[in-house]
Length: 541
Image 1 (spheres, helix red, strand yellow):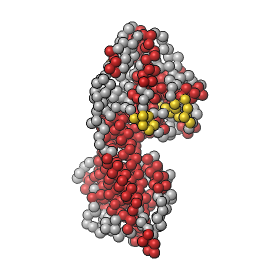
Image 2 (cartoon, one colour):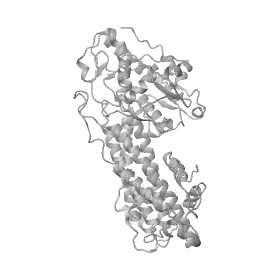
Image 3 (tube, helix red, strand yellow):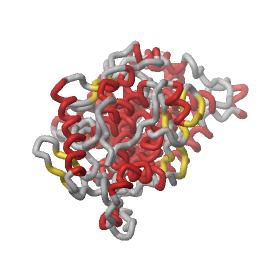
Image 4 (cartoon, helix red, strand yellow):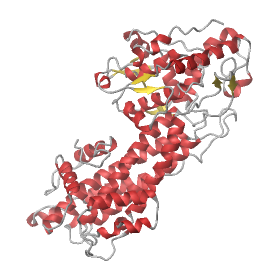
């Protein structure tokens, strides 16, 4: 068998790991990959093109990566049998691959897995997936060469984005089919997006002055046999769910003002005696936003549950996010292919770290928590538009003058649409992780469905962000109407800033107009987590 030398190693620390060709990325510090734990926030920064990546230049880490590849080569030269290197894959692990075909095996794996379907991952999702796969292989237990890590970094820094179909993974043995599109792109096969154009991967590498990578034994398997798709998507889902939970708390404060409700429902003592941390956090946010609002009863001694119990609903999401972070970041910072190559003790370990059960359960749970936010906001919106429950606001929050009130319907249709989006979000909460299917000749007879769970979670998030956009426009309208009715209504400064921010591109609705464009623009801002910064201050578009 021909030797695969490490002549590509210098490439690791040169152009391939820098953000050449991306001026926006060059303006930001690179995220270092290798020898350290990666955070969700760093993956999101890479995905949203705020940061390039650079491989760690620590000599000890670099040497460890090289030792793994060298040990694997020596094992093959000694005639050892290594799964997926000189055997067939999956159920075909009992098939020995002749030495003269060992070098051809990795590319064959990428080719027969080129059967993905469904919508393609978008740019941010693709970058998150590549970052997750790169970080896992950089853990040093996969037996890959440094040049492979360098080329994955090049995909990120040069924005060479494989076209990854979203459907076709059962979440064990990892995300084989979608990740085959990453492996194929490295090998110069299939199409990639580059500079806004769909092009052949081979042509893009030539333009960058690099030859397509010849995958060494196990490198096709190392790239594909892992949880990077579900994990990358989970990082994005986490960030969006975090932002949504904060927004839901702010909209609860605005709804309390609009409905002439009671700030006393969010008194700290109530939450001290039921000490769920997330619930207390949500109540504190609402309390801060209502700072200065009197605690005397408005129209009711107790507001309805969608207002009074909002911290209890939001708190479930906040507490879920704490353990979701733990599990997502543990998966992100793990060696999750098979077999693993232990370079320190020179062992080959055959196991099942490609199983995505933790991500599957985290995403199934998170989508339930997020859908409950949609339901909460939809119920608050229903109170605001209904003259039987909104404590004196105009019907459907119409701002029309009395002479034209009969033909104006304000937010009536917005509320109907919000209910439709909420119903669809709730429908999508069925757990994917319980739908394991025995496949691949009963070799993969218990699988995680983690990637389906992550995709479901993103769909629930998208629908809930639409509900949040509708609720935001309606609640801002409602507060303005309340001020019109009672000019003495106190609106604390943070909420005034928020109202002004929304009003800058969605004016007061005095006469009915189509709101689709404003809803889409606001939904995009919410999905990008741009409504305010981490300190909950108005951030502008």
